[in-house]
Length: 506
Image 1 (tube, rainbow, N blue to C red):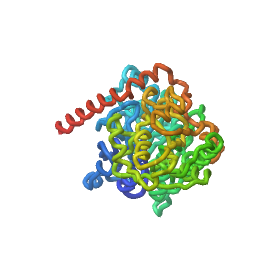
Image 2 (tube, helix red, strand yellow):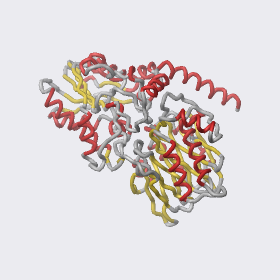
Image 3 (cartoon, rainbow, N blue to C red):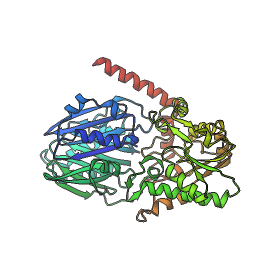
Image 4 (cartoon, rainbow, N blue to C red):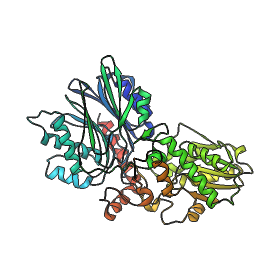
């Protein structure tokens, strides 16, 4: 999960890109970067940390030009926090190209070998985004004539990328002297939308991971980039779009609606907020159908993404909805923090219970999902410490039992609390008196009901079914080796030393 923005405007875009990254900060807190195009020249600044910490006034002044791309990074597939893997990334052959990527390539190792042996290209990092960048550069070289590009050649290159690459990818890229390119994988797993702003000087175009970025920056949403489609906006503001593969199947990631996206976004024609309301309504029906004997006094959400579901659940059950936890907004989201010990330590720094909402009550806590169970266990204990008589727990999502390989850095299967456990066993693990999970069929129906044109979703973390068809047990075993907590800690230490060495060399 990462945040992407690309823009071609009629005036300087540095502030616009910065503001857009702030809006998309929830999609990645590991690193941030902006590249602008001023004529045929690129200006880049990127670094590790939050957007507000990476950029200073001197950096913004340097980022001149009327077009640019920006990225906020969330590490995937066990990658460590390192400046070297901050995006956008750059190559200078056959053209100057900068690229930002959201997703994960499932055939990255094969591609890396092909790049070295066949394409004569060297990859410097462990990032699959650098692999994707070099594949695109090679395909552009094959598609161009006398080292000159037009829209047809660019779309032919994207078609070549689709033929070679497997996995999930939403991409924004800039080609020096030509324009802004954006494309999406043939399954449309990761989100990508574009919009337009009408100005006196002509139309301005913006591509982003979520529609909320368009809203905040004053652009009108046109539509989502279709699965397998590419859009190209040249630096004169002329828009081109083309489907670049014949084989597509629209399967957006269902976890975007559960947790990842902001509630005020619309992805693939589906309102994130509306789906979360419907998840709450479905949960209410399940509680009444299967757990009607439970005496629930109050419904309390775990801030923030579970609020819409919790409100609708409370209304469906006819019980009070209360805010029982106050969130410290200056602590990072625990789900995306590296290392179990850091994650565990941060929970009570992040949330504090309001005792009056728990004392002597049977409380139904509602969260968007349960992944490792670390946060859930701490929160259940916090409710008990605040005086709750009984603590029930509801998840707006089904049990997470399988790793996600398409751009969400979920833990290995054995580190997922629901893996190999029944609902009752998970309830005991987190200390709850009862645990109620959403049903997968209900979750799919909740999303499809908002846009029936989307017939199915990428839901592998719940079902274990991987839509790209190339995820083998061997691949999952490799992911397991990369993502376990011990390996993450080792890579974090290694990346920290690398960044220290880079800083010292400066």
